Length: 523
Image (cartoon, rainbow, N blue to C red; front, side, top):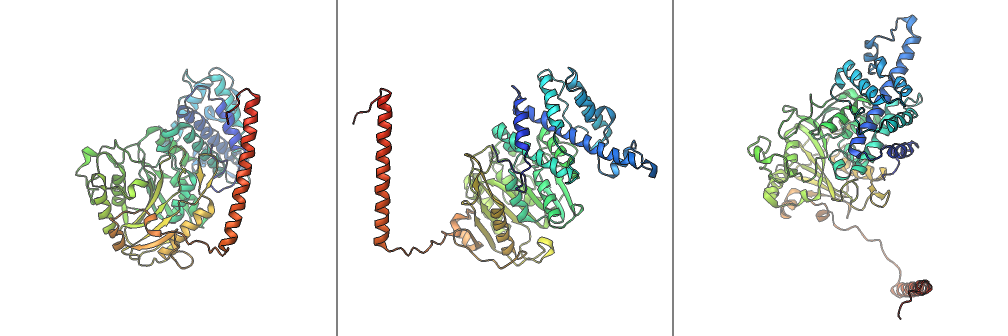
């Protein structure tokens, strides 16, 4: 399982306990279904708690003209209006009743009715016969104990961290299905740290559960900016994941235009006229069934028609199409995208490089994702590499006909037997290197053998437009070995003799154990 940490590295302490308890109540229900039960209840608990807290404050201020029963009072505070039948206290009081599933569904419907921005979003799956009502009641009791309204900390942050933890756990439990919408938080934080989306339009055309937007808002606030300076646009083709995104953003008070409904970005672009200042995305890897045959002459394929059997270069050109004149894009793709020559992809990559759009390439370590062993990389594209403004309005240096390559494959630390995670120091080093090269960071940029190198486009062309960082950054410098040869050989021979002796001792012990069990080995 993923480590019990939050997006900023701090540990809340109760997420893993809560997950383990909730997972025990899952019984035979598939994780993909149970996800909506648990996350729906957590969402309902939060908005009810937020409502009750404001209701109590308005009640205390009635003499000053406050009206605790006026929905507009809650709208002004960006708190959802929760009608009487949907309040958590009522559901908790009826948690052990056989009709509890019907009551929860009715609560979800009432909240959607009173809050237009949530219509068609909340799960109404609790009355289904497949859902054990006794276990549902136990789950309601369990969630009742989550401290979502800590007065000493922003409530959205506490709930958001619980929500994020559960999304990660469900991604792990679901296997490959989860990878279509969940990106590990540390990978998202790296993308955001490199793009530094302080102001303007942020767009993710395959937004999944909305993690890119959450991290972008956090970044702005953490660096003294205002969330009002950022406009959020997204799209998602999976209806259940689209609902998750709407809920995930709603609990944090993030206003986002995800379109009126779910839709495929290739076939039905809901933001056709959008030109974004920042694009952050993790499109599905190597997607084969993306409708390419019907889109052969699409206006977005300016650099070549992508193959019908792989959407990677369709995504890349979709991103380019939606970039503003000074826009930058950062996204995750499978490593094969950096070097493939199949079905015209090499020619498309050549055209993109020659158009001077490739800003930076980052090779990442393996085992970062919960559900795939496919090694991945980060692409960064820039529409204008000559001038413009970077982080916090700083002027950028002229980077025309040059691309930065960063090889981060040796970074990260194992958090369990199968998952690796980039540390905050790793993220800072990669992002600081990028910003130093762009000219909007602290300090001067320098090539570091084995890690980073600024490469002219002519050299990339000489390598047949392959964009794999390892081809350009070289090998790391070896530490000077000043141990005399005779001393080193004597030391190594001594160590080898000790290892031979230990091996012989272990072999004798194993033979003796087998002999006692009646399975003696021949010499």
